[in-house]
Image (tube, rainbow, N blue to C red; front, top):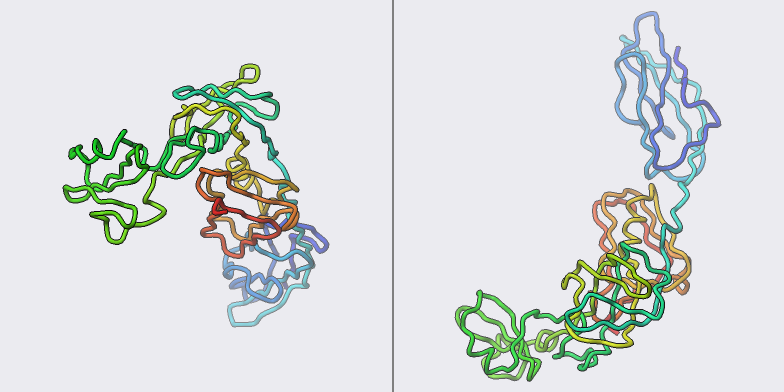
Length: 332
């Protein structure tokens, strides 16, 4: 004889949890093994040692009713089926908010300072990451000029003549000249022009790498005093490269969303809103994970100017589902 002892019929289990399935089996010849089954399909391998049980990982199992049973096998090959039990798998409640919010304001910061002054610091907390957007610098965030958060390449010379005269460079270094805004590449003991249609251009040159790219200031809030945020971390350790006044300032939603993903068992649902993204959203090793917004036109993840384009990377996550939001990079 064989019977299932756990779970009992009518049990509800939450997707993503582990459930012990167990049974009792006896036979006058001797029980050789018990094979548990889910919806008629083998659940793991046969258990050949009493007490008979297996751990059922419900990750990726669809919501709804499912049938569990077991088949006992004796030493001469006879089999007997246990009476089936029905269990109901319910979807884990997605995380909808863990500190996710939108804070957009303006601010001012001086060159070589990490003190960002706002009209009001309401909405910001120590540990948040902020983005001070390009556009209010003397160069107005144009290619070939310095951004509040620096530039790519990070090292510059006042003039092209000074740049070309400096031969003491690590191989494959990029530098730029502030008088022209143009980028050069040091390769094999000589300078190459990166923009097209210049003498000594590398290959044919490239428009996008031909001039220095201004960067927004991305940094972590380390202290708040009144309406002034002290910044640290990030590419410049929180210090501005040029003075700006009235620049757009955003709360960076990237680290908040990434923590929501780490903390959620099966998925997250983002609320209605426009959320600035200054980095990459990561989903890794999360089988069946659902990343959802509240609608394509209701939830928007976007890149402010001067930050890496908004993107998601999903790896080692079979059956992951991404839906119902807009991801807008900084290409236009």
